[in-house]
Image (tube, rainbow, N blue to C red; front, side, top):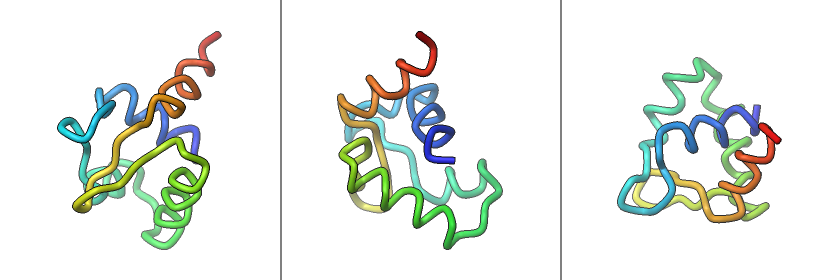
Amino acid sequence: MSEEIITMLSNLGALEEQKAVSVDFLKNSQQLKERVFDDEVRKLIETGYVKQTDGKVYLTRVGLFRALSRFS
């Protein structure tokens, strides 16, 4: 599931704070239980793939590399 979140953020262009996507939007898009989603986002933040600010998330440079590596 983490991989899907990373890929979705990449596809949406959420690559910097100004282009961050709301957590609620991602939750609704993924149709996941809130607790499961929150746990996955927390793991992505801890691994340095995602940053969160003001209820929005975006990929870090490392997260973008991770997203793109799925296609190579």
